[in-house]
Image (cartoon, rainbow, N blue to C red; front, side):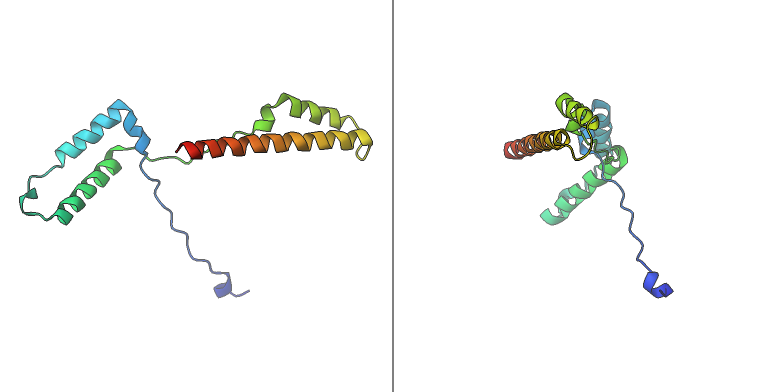
Length: 133
């Protein structure tokens, strides 16, 4: 392969967005409001609606970037089957049997049905959450 064929464009590193939920913390909310008050100018008399709305949006963006902490993408994956006692009991029981035996196959089927049950519960919860929104 030539150097030209191996070349890949550089990926742009995006800054994480400001965490809007941090406005629920009173100290951060107070500093955000103070930054908005401090940067407010009184030249709005001769502006059109578009210029005024653009100025307000820019004001909020700069205040948010200055005061709000950056959001972190920490998604904790909750694997339900790790905490399931019946699932772990079935796995431990299956370990004691020889691969290919009838008991091993029966326990494998029970494990698969347990996984399907957990998957269906998870999908049901996600559907309920999306319906509430």
